[in-house]
Length: 623
Image (tube, rainbow, N blue to C red; front, side, top):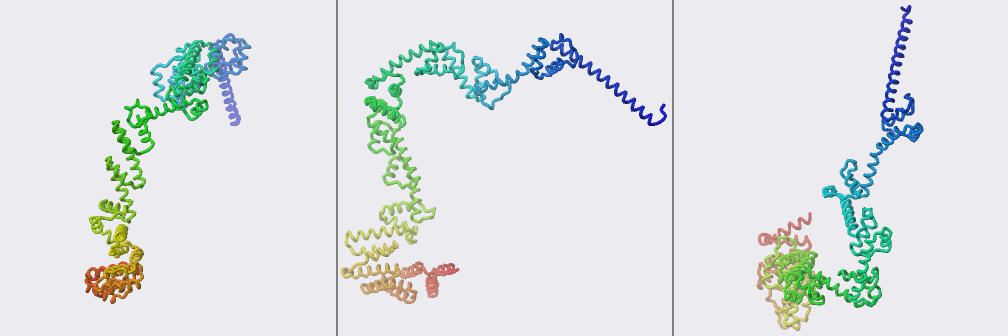
């Protein structure tokens, strides 16, 4: 048909463009037709068929489309409808527009009611909530059913329930005092406060009285005036009852009436009120107030201490004194307890005893040592558990004091022994024997020192009492064992020329020399020993002392010589060996101890086998 491919291609493009144009025209006609139909339908739906213009370009079509899509119209569009007198359509649109905002209005109303009726903020805020109709019901002045109140309780709406109760109370009070014509039922109304005052027969303020007048609530005013008249009569009665008639004040709002009311309702006056009565010269009223206060205190004490069967007694009786003492102190004396027994008040006695026992227990726990009187009281009143606690606590404290760290040490006899030592009482032979069995004397601990000091003091006292001079070496020996050689020297520093008994002179010199030796004054110690030999050459004690002195000086062979002399004069070999052992044990110098131990082992390794331990100690210390 066409002579060239180029022309053929142009023809094809032209044909396609024409086809597209034809299709587009058909579509436009279809859309225009649909818009016309849509406009007609909308005019019919919104009753605007009287409006003649049917072109979709009409503003009415835009307005109706927006309304149908629930889009809010502008003021301009509403004005256009009025100008064209399309009133039926306008009314329909107004109703629809109003309905469109209904959800927001409902939400706002619900939010307002929740705030007004104190619903917790975290409560469900959906309009479908069951709470909404309940609050609406309250707002309309209707009462809630039991099931509705229970729903509030189940959801822990405490403040709302309290408000509901106030609303109910308000309604009941309005009914009671004939104030129902006042429409407001919410408890924040001034009337609710006024009616509650009428219910409690409390005076109204001038403003509250004026409020009732302004709202023409004359029945409530009549009730108030009757109450006011009764209160004035009450003022006169109270003034007479509490001996305050001479005071001129008859006001219901005055200080006197307030004070007399407190007295009549059995309430305690505060300091400022007592001071006011004093300033007014109402001393009789003050005396009555004091008497009433004592009665209140007495009754309270009787209840507290289970003595209520004597409520008719006046507060100036001895039972009141005892109960007051029991309340402020912990201890009742025997006279007080006997009176309680006479009054047959065993429960009161039990309370008093338990209170004092508790105080003693607290003292024990805080580390206080109970006195013998307190322990006797516990024993007499059968508080054995507290006695045991006291003993164990005291025993633990005494063990610490006397350096006894072994936890397995038994309470007895050690506790009895330490108690005597604490009281400066001498131990009887049985207790001394028990100390020996426990090796508490031989080990030289604090218990041994306390025991020896006690014995030294006893024999010094005996010396002063009897003038019996044989107590001098005995007391001196105990002072030495108590690690107080100075006291031994002080005691033995006497004029021996005034002592007739040579044996006694020798004994005094031996113990004095031993005290010098304890203080490392070996020259004076030897001097005393040699003088003792002169007074009593056949006694082994001076020889034993010189032997020990020689060992102190590391003169072991000479010391053995003197020890042999002591044995020849009656000293036991075991005692001499024990003396050697004491010398080595008490030597502070490791080298001296090692040297003495070696000497004895060379002399007789079997007899002095115990000395090996001192070699080991010296070797260990050397390391």
